[in-house]
Length: 451
Image 1 (spheres, rainbow, N blue to C red):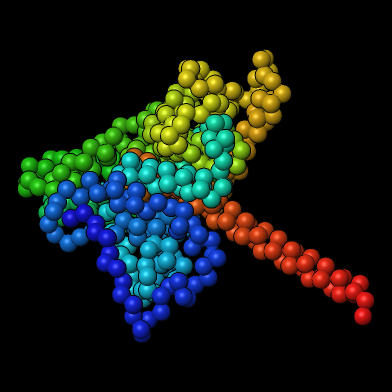
Image 2 (image 1 turned 135 degrees about the horizontal axis):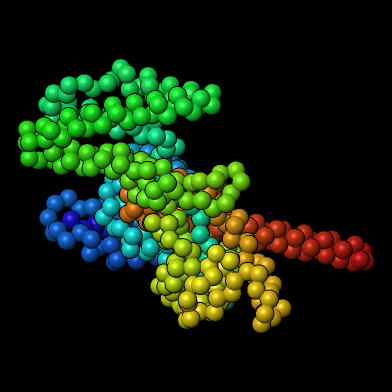
């Protein structure tokens, strides 16, 4: 059943309202007035087609939790626990009185993400852009010039090695066989872990011939268990368990058949869509995750578009999608886009695209903006250190798409909060200086007045 507006809270003589407990000059209090919360109720209402059952959680509470989670780099459990302790967070999410219980179960955050999808979280990003315009953190002219770049959002997987993958595959197969009542000839529960650890020791000692021999033996253990299960698949009853066994055996067959230099390799059994991406970094040659396109304003570094790009496509082929998303979220087409040399051959004709390093036909103003293009790099760095872009814990390509957009929302929220805090500090300083100036002028007139 779709969410309902909470009933108006009646005055309680035994409880104080949140507005009486908190400082109304706080930046979170100001931000709450800048966001149009009615948008989420209107746009997410169609996601609840049923008219019976218990009403869903109010949309403002869920949207506020998503904002706070990615603005302060918290997990689902941590943001719910801190919400119950922080009156400013509760006021930001629309509460009237202080609540001592958790707002929702942490698992409900996952269900809400699955329900609203990528389009729903894009509404969250759109509202941060509009709130930034209302707060003055981003000007309307800034949306005419944007900078686009790509980065890698790593997946929550262990570093893939052949020994670890073979051992994990064997362990998963043995567990599924036990659940399906399949009697295995051998499960190698004693020999498998011991041999997997020995492979790493051989590699550390640079005894590669012994290492390759141990890898072949470990691969043989996994293959024997796999073939034993495939021979007895007919004995498994139809249902979800048989589907899981079939899916796992297909992945293990893919793992055992892949070659060292195959392009579409399997790097994780629980995340088959992970890509191996090389960005030319000296400290990290390869990153295992998905590529993310980031679009920011050239002046200010405000995020106006983020999109996950599964399959590790060429950067130039992704520029059209990035500009299209910016136009949808900001409701206006940018005039100029600044990119690096990895976008050569982009084929975009609707927007003027300037590639760094270009010299012909470039005015002094455009050359200055091209030098400013590299300012997107610290923006990405802040999203990885201050935000959660470093590692994506959500499952599948759909989880990558949702998480990338939410990381952009968190960055914008941090920028708006910093702008509101600095603006209020400057305002207080100006009032203090004016008060001191008027008091000093009054004393000066008193001294000059004759007795």
